[in-house]
Image 1 (cartoon, rainbow, N blue to C red):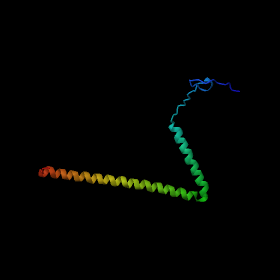
Image 2: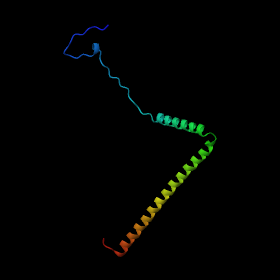
Image 3: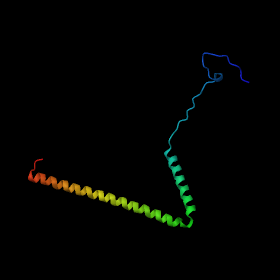
Image 4: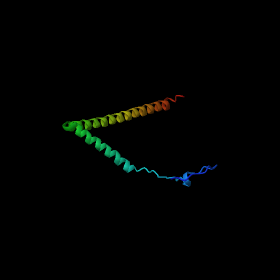
Length: 106
C-alpha cells in the first residue's frame, strides 16, 4: 500500500527516486561487420544450392562465366579510355607543333 502524499508546489519525482542516465557506448567493429555479411552470403548460397539441387553446378558455372565477362568488359572500357587519351595527347602535340612552327597568334 502506497503512502498518501500531500499536495506540493514542487514537483518531486516518484517517492524521491532519482532518474538515472544509462549510457552504453556504441562501437563499430569492421571485422565483425564483414563476418556477419559473409555469414549472410554463405547462408544465401546454401539456400540457393538446396533450391537448385542438381542444377546448382550449371548455375555456378553460369555465374562464373558472367563475372569473367564483366571483367573483360571492364578491361575493354579501360583500354578504350586509354586509347582516347592517347589520341587526344597526340592531337594536342600536333597542334602545339603547328602553333610553334608557323608562329600563329591566338
